Length: 143
View (spheres, rainbow, N blue to C red):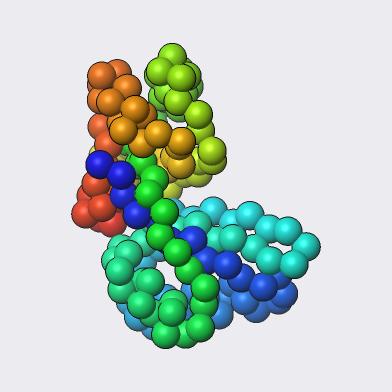
């Protein structure tokens, strides 16, 4: 049940992130989760958005370089140790985490963590067996 994340490559200079978010806002696209990693020359914005295909189109039409990547969205009880329990489950299944970031708190008081892993199917099976709920593309867009 992997979902699609949009990754955008931005030149590392003032105003680029603002321009990208203005383009998305003008298209009525809601950013549900966001991570920014940077180097001296460029940044990579990773996002979960309300409409992944519309976002890809809007970004391309506005000359941004973007790609889609499969990730897993895990709903986590917003309590002490919630994230640790997910990480223990993935570790016990020998799932390698490439990166992760959090989304806005969902309805009902749950947190949601976005994971990019080496093996999505293995991670999903381990998480389901551990009693964790995974979000699909529609659910994560509504968080």
